[in-house]
Image (cartoon, rainbow, N blue to C red; front, side):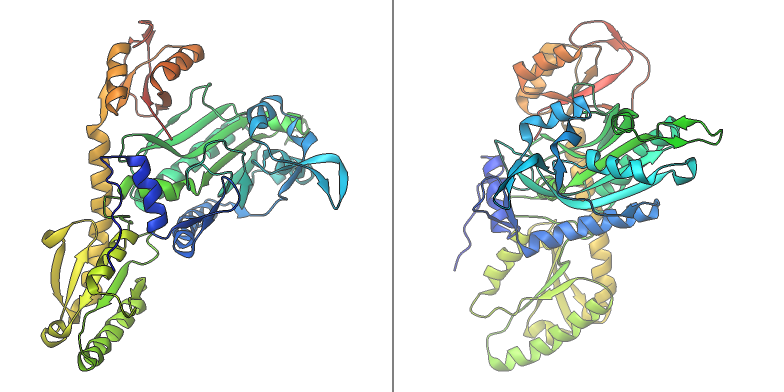
Length: 480
């Protein structure tokens, strides 16, 4: 039973991605347009993302809560920019229990409004601040063009919502949570990201400032992988949230919100995957080591499985996520291809000769062929596998960093930007343009300003479009 090949990335990256997420058993199609069924393997990957983030949230003092899925329509209308930004994407319930509702209910697109309504009741004094809340939930945004994990009508995410006594505290929170996202992306997902601020044209509806981590996928497109918003006092004023400060004077708090979604699953697929399938960083891989027993006779089976079970237990006791492929009727070659497709970092092969020699064959997913295969003594298998997982994690990050650095190009003029974008890279250059200028470039090239990077060269230069003097460089790229 041969495995069906996938479309190579070099032929059609989009088609490759769409095939991979299904063949690797991450998801299945849904009878509801634009929605996705996340299968157990895909959900375990999401759970690894969730776990890595949740630990970081709690370490920074945030608590999890849950708020209703349905939001009164009037709540969204209280912050004008916010409702305008989300209006085209809203799903609205007008009939429930067989009766028309007095007020329509919006299916949660994001929870600023309903959470702010609660904050109004919870915040009375400066002693109630800061208020640090996070929610793990699903949201609905009515998308016209959908793609598994990257853009679906319903998706899973976390959304943090906080309130602070001063503008400085709110800004510090916004930046802290962006750094939490960046730390997870780099150290767990092995995705190098660029931290920066969104332009006013690209910021979150209702925010004062939006900060982002931007990642380069293997087709050189950008993926916004997590955002953190300083909402100023906009929502506090819209929902009349007030507190008495230390001078017993009434003040509006400063609020923030920040979110990261199942889009991160897509980011991991597109940052690391190759033409054989997924390549999962060990820290987030549902299975870190798969053991494939190899035997022909019942006698060989008995001897091999005894060793396999012993080694599996040793690895499991060392908190290594291990799976033994006990499927019958499939050749070892089929199993190798299947686990390569699923992106398991390490494959261990145990056959009669390995049992006799007291060794095990280890094949690493990040290195193809003989280069990535080694034979190690069974006696030190735990240490050997642990070292290998650390090395694979680092190597995947290094490969992604190299790809990114090779494909960011400094440009001085608009024609140079056009050329870079057309060839599929990111263009970095001085910028003093307006929102209308951004719109024109998007219309003409398909590229947007991904961010104003925090890491700036210093000094000043001539804007690539207008020629005006500028003190900041920006990154342009096509994006998902």
